[in-house]
Image (cartoon, rainbow, N blue to C red; front, side, top):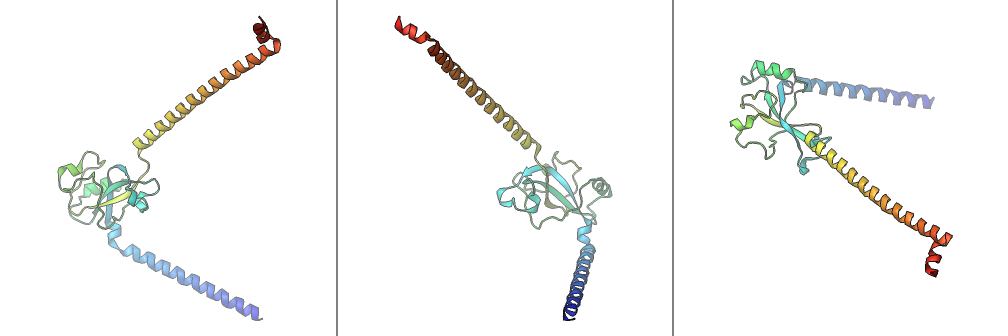
Amino acid sequence: MRLLSTLAASTVIYILLWASSLTIAADIYADAGQNGTHQELICIPFGECEPCPSDELDKPFCQPFGNRRLMHCHNASTSSFSTSSYHEISDSPLRPRIPPPNRQHNSNSNPNPGSDHDSGSNSPHRPLNKIGETPAWESCGRIISRERADFYEFIGCNVLFAIGAILVVYVRSRRLHALHARQLAARIGLIRNRTAR
């Protein structure tokens, strides 16, 4: 009887813990959905993928391949963000992203954010107004040019190893052939006849 009451009490406690954790999770999810900043921030890629610096490899935007791409984020509710730009970006498979606070991008970028050089021809989208723009980073896949160079290096090393292995096999087979020829000559007496004459 005592065992049953202990089991019932632990079951009730277990159910209450699950119910309270589900309630807390639902409240957290509801609070996150009410924050308008998360819903109205739209980020577009700007430029090419680039390797992360060694001191930032542990950051989420450098995972899993150690590459990152600059993003320009805009608040969709500001007047500087045009409706046509929004429709261009909303068709993109990219989801809105939250920029890290006060994140400076690398030395390849222009120190004058309002200049024409900053909206270079690398951007796949039309450059937007710079007012209210926040730079951020996104994780990106492998860098094609670097992967291609690594592939050709791999092929080149394999070709060199194959040439080296073929040379070693050729030299070894020549030595073995010469050794077998000497052994055969010694068996049939060719070497003794030459020394006897």
